[in-house]
Length: 478
Image (cartoon, rainbow, N blue to C red; front, top):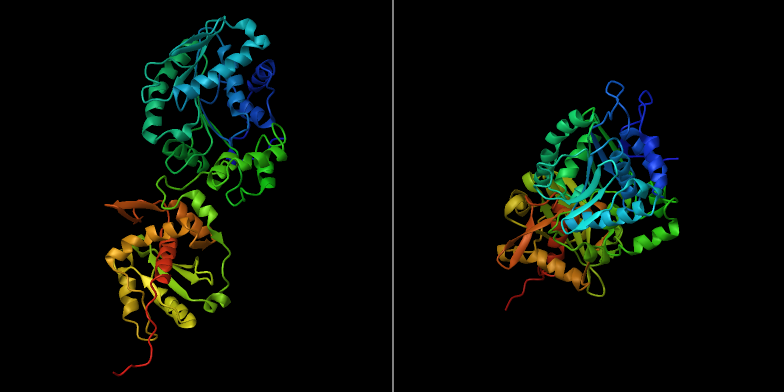
């Protein structure tokens, strides 16, 4: 039984399908189709009753790793080569080496199978890898470049690992291939197909992200079929039972014991694990402020509100672009001298922030630190003019502000600073980028991909814990 999909094109039982023929080719190649592969082959292979050829011209496939995507592509490509004489099937990957490595594995499989009888001697020259067939058809690999598709006559094109492409590069490749598919349909009578296949990528995977998101939103051509396998958005990728339930090859190509070994290969890289085996997009930025492994290694338990006053505490406040959100964090000085930072609240706008900040500072007799410039300037001004209660501030100059982020990262690296687990803070750390000013840097609000204020408020709070204002003592007369 096929595992549940996150979305996709259902099988139309009113149309015949080429899927069983693909299944037969897969058996001859020694890789019988798994249930999910058969589903894709059946839907993608649906036949238009009006034309007697493929109904779909585009197939978009999103799967986790270790699911057998490559063997499905090989079976479909081999079958496609036998639709008629002189057909051209292309496999494109990130680099020429990736495409070549895939092709050489395919050669070993096909030459060791009964299908070797319909092949001709392969070409293995530098820059000229091809597997010809007796009917004149040919399967060949190509590298993904901006000129990969131009002038090429293609009957079946697979654009694999599409997550690696920017929108500009991907569009250039597709735009190069598509005009030729119309001429091939007229010449062969068989509808050419473009397969775009990939595991989900990152925020920079603009080509694949845009197409997959459009499919999910229902903005898809009737001649495009799509398939999306992976864990649900609210599922925990660290729960191996969840991975076993939603991964289309779990229990078929590998078992739970092997899954644990796969997880060990991603130590310090939880986002990479979620992307590879949960097929969850990594929305983080490339030049993130805090290394992912360092962030994962500096977790600490959150402190209950009732315990905040038991140790020295400072509150840090930061505001996002256009004053959309205000984040408040606490920095607690531990008995061993380390500092634990903890996100307390994310408020809508800044309107209710003064009252909440005043309440916290008064309740725990704690100072507050806030940048008096930039997005926090208006809120900082309102806080400094409060009289009931009168707040204590950790004075922060412009020069000091440029050291806040670096001091926080240095503290994490030395295990002098820790952070309490919190999904909003985790997302902020993943999505916050930095901008440099000489040898110093700060978090860039415009260049990040999500809320920066949760992380910034923790950075400010940690700085404040090391720069607490002097307590007001009794008046001294000399």
